[in-house]
Image 1 (cartoon, rainbow, N blue to C red):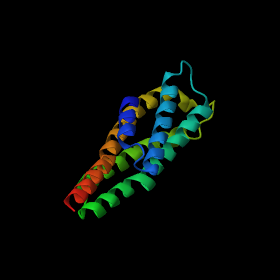
Image 2 (image 1 turned 120 degrees about the vertical axis):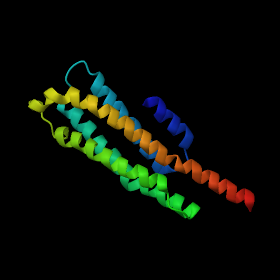
Image 3 (image 1 turned 120 degrees about the horizontal axis):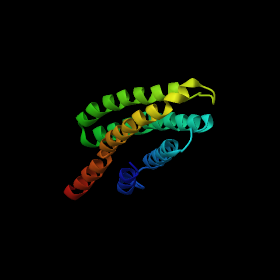
Image 4 (image 1 turned 90 degrees about the horizontal axis):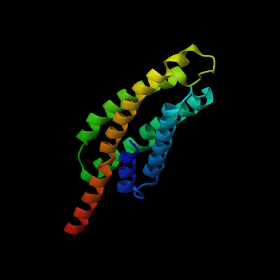
Length: 158
């Protein structure tokens, strides 16, 4: 997942400050996820809560700052609806519901909470969800590359 993130960052770096900040938030989320999964002992309630907060912040930034910006920018530049986004965004929304279920279960966890016994299982389920989300988001954000190509074509034709 980190390799894919680095590739996405190299491809999109500097094109849009909101995308840059969002990808930095993805890196932080991913690093915190890895830290939770690689811990030799049960992570602290504080570490789990911090991860959950980053999870919510990341998901919110995507929904409110990135996805709709990309769709609107493409529609404006191309004058047509973006069917790719129409297929991807519902899948991201479904993914968000599943991620928020993790947050709901662990966002206010205490050290003595019995649900900590299920943490490993839930973290193992969360990994593929994060990977799916990043893949879907990368497909959506790849539209920014397409926008650049459209702009170049317009300049060349002018």
